[in-house]
Each structure stands twice: as C-alpha cells, then as structure tokens.
Length: 619
Image 1 (cartoon, one colour):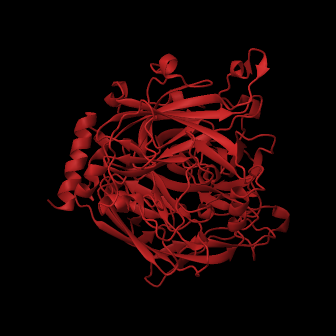
Image 2 (cartoon, rainbow, N blue to C red):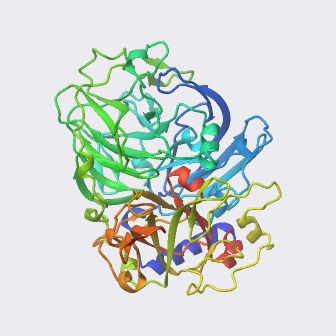
Image 3 (spheres, rainbow, N blue to C red):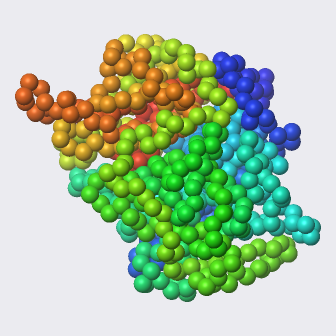
C-alpha cells in the first residue's frame, strides 16, 4: 500500500470515528505540490525605529517571513536551510513548526526538536513534506527552538479552493497583479468566498513582540539562576514594525507604521495572527466593529465584538465593513492579563481610506523584471488620533466571550460522548536548588534533549529501537509513562485533558495559553480553583464547544483554598482549570504546551505518544 493510500485510509477512519461530515472540507479538484525554500540567516535589525539594533535570525532576510499560501488538499514541500555560523553551543540550531496544521500521516513534518526531528544544525537542511488534509483557514509558522520565534515567523494561509485564493489575480485589463503578503491594495474579483462567507478582499495582520536585548541573552536570563520575572516587550510589532518613539523617527531610517489601505463601502476579511512570544493582547480598530468568523482555522457563526483578545498562538478572521468617513483610523493593541504594567502599547498600525494622503508618502506603482505591477507601500510616521476604546483592566474577566461562540456547521457529536479517560496536567512553578525556576507538569519539567547522540522519539519508533507502551492505564500515573517520558494514547481514544493552573496563596495567578500539536481540540468545561474528578468530572458548562488549537487557561481563584484550619497554606493551590477534548485519530508524537514561550522553555510542556504501533504503517 502506498503512503498516499495509507494516508487516505487513516483520514477516512478518523472521519468515520467522529461521525463528522463537514460542508467546508471539500478538497479542490486539482490539488498541486507547492515548493518553498527558507534560508535561515543572521542579520541586525531595528524594526521599531529605536536606538537599539539586535542581531537576530531571519527567514529569507524578512520579518515576518514569506507567506506560505496553499489550497486545501495541496502538498507542501518546504526546504529549511540553516545558513547560520557554527557555534559551540546549540543556540544556532533551528527547527520550524507549522502552527495549527494537524499533519495527518506526517508527524515527521511537525518541526519539534527531539520529538519529531533533530534540530537543523548550521550548514544542514531539512525538508518538510506534508499534505493539507481537511483544513482551511489562518495559520502561521514559527521557530521551535529557544526564543528564536521572536523573529522567525510568518503567515500560513490555506484556502478552501483556488476560487477563494486571491494570491494571483487578473484585473479587467488582463494584466497580472501580484499582491504582497496579503496586506496591500490590489485588483480583486467582484467577491471572494471563504467557506460560507463572502467579502471583497482580505488583509493579514501578524502581531509580535520585540525586546531591546539579544534573544540569546534573554533566553539565558530566563533559564538561569538570576531569573525573577518576565519583562514586557519594548515594542509590539504589527506586520514586523512600529515606532518605539515617534520623536526619533525619520523616513530615511524608519519604515513607519504598517498601513492597511482599504476602499470605502467594502467588506474585508481581516486575518489576525497572534505570533507573540509572551503577552496576550487586546486588538481593536478605531470606529470599526469586528465580526468573528474563524478561530484557529475553524469557521464559527458570526459574532460581533469591538475588540479581540489574542493570546500567543491564536488566530482569528473577522469581517470588517469600511463604512466610516474617509480618514485614518488606528489599529492598536494593548496588554491584557498583566500585573501592574502599562497596558497601552506602541503597537499601532493604520487603517487608511485612500482619500486622505496628507500624512503618507506617495504610493508609487513600479514594475518588476516580469513587468508585473506592484505597489510600493506608503510610509506613515504619525499615528492616527482616532484610537479604539478599550475596556479597563478591571473589566477583564475569565473566559472573555469564548462561551458565546458557536461552530458554524454545528457542534461535533464527539463532544457529547463519554470520554475514554481523563488526564490532568497540573503545572507548578518551582525554584530549584541551583536557583533556576522551572514549571513542573505533574512533577516533571520538560527539557528538550541537547546531547548530540540523542535521537528524536519519532525516529526511535520508526527505526524500531524504542519500546512501545506496555499499558494505557492511567489510574495510578495519570497517564504518564516514566520510562517513555510521554503520555501514551490508544488509537481513537476520546481523551479529556484537564489543564490546571496553580499559584501560591495570596499571590497572583497567571493565564496560560495551551496549544495542542497534531490535533484541534474542544474546550468542554472550565472552573474555579482545583479540579476534582469526582466533583467536577461531569461539568459541561460550554454549550457549543468550538474546535481550536489554543485554549487560554484563565486565572480563576478560589480563596477558600488559601487557609487550612486557620493556617495559611504554603504549597501551591489550584487557581482555575480548563478541560479540553481530543480524539486520538492521528498516530504520531505530539507536543502539548503553554504557548507563552518562556513558560514552555521552563518546562510547561508534555509529549503525547499516540498509537505508536501504527506510526510506521502510515509515515
């Protein structure tokens, strides 16, 4: 049986097991193979027009990196070349993860060092080859080594079909018009269709953070004995730039704020990607409501908000109607779930209606060597005065509007079925004897291998040198196999995973955005304090669970846990939990971790070893 036949067989089994028929999952009639080449190099940049320049890693000398664009059913062939210099440490090793892509039958392409592959060392390359199965929407890719993702990231857009894909368009004169990174003006057909929704055009906004310190130095601080707390980023970037201070900026040295041109009386699909390393952000566009239609690659029933809450790793598509007076409107982000820090950031961009040109440089058409018309982006060094009105910090509440969202095609029947079992992941921050801080999940702080002779878990399965799980009983070990150092799963199990926050009594409880590789999941319940299976196991307080791959575990403190018979409790206590559900329909080795990257590096990560006896049959 060929690999393709095995893959199709696996996907069919998965769909049958879930009893799901999805109207939006029709594969285009002529899928193709798309080729990308990414070269990782080092370069000094100053994306916020400040007095700080840092040497960083970039893909093809860009930040964000080049957009990956594909249609559902396509095969991707992505070659990653590490062109960094040799150093005696592991810090110049790289690996790239394609965030949100489930990698059915292609676990080896997931991009997690020592789980699915060896990191790519300087002078080496790695080819990711995978097919996009039953997915369309907004994704992104990013580095999965250290804090490299601060600058190594880019958008990954998957369309339902070529008809929905505006990457190359023909205008009425017959001339080809090529868009640049889904953000500048372009000629478009009368209407685009994404799933059940129609709109005139689309834009992509990718949010990231920028610190005025080299990322290797920052990483050593986080992992070392002098760590105290995570500092806020000096700048929040939108599509790779902003102004740290407008007083220092000049056109000659600064790209200015990102300018998003729109035409009046149109409907735009705005794709918002949370590529932040640490902070959850509020996102708004002045005088414009945002109608959410997609979360993490899944269509939902339209839900209108004035602002988004975007955690690291989360993606949204919103419909925006350009029904305002011709003016420049601020696109702005603020910090959310932060303690005693300034919430307003310098994360600004400009929604630009074309009639107003006073603060913009000229938009100049130019032709490349193929005679294809492109538009130079305008430069703006002055932020618009019309700003979004954000809610106050005191109005932040756990769970935001998540419980109000509904899947467009109805709730998947699998969320109503009984679970095969429940795994509880209880995270505790510990100060170790050497002075370093680590997050232990069920008593274990995950640490990726650094020795040159360690093979990835997936390689051991494929070459038959790794033992298979001897049991899947969770009654004594909560599912963790200390010999394998993974959580083994049976094929087609329905597994509930409880993500448990903790804190010391009377100290702040933190939010944690948890990400599942290899699977989208459903959040089916959440609650206060400490999860107890006997008391809380049957709670289902989310009426219409949506499928996503990031769930924010919010702080939800139970003060009754602080005292024990009048004595202050001196051990970590629960301060909020979320229960997510996955179906083990995708044999492979999959990371599950907090997408606050410093927390992940400090140990807040586990590995699922899913149906390893089947992996060799489908890879």
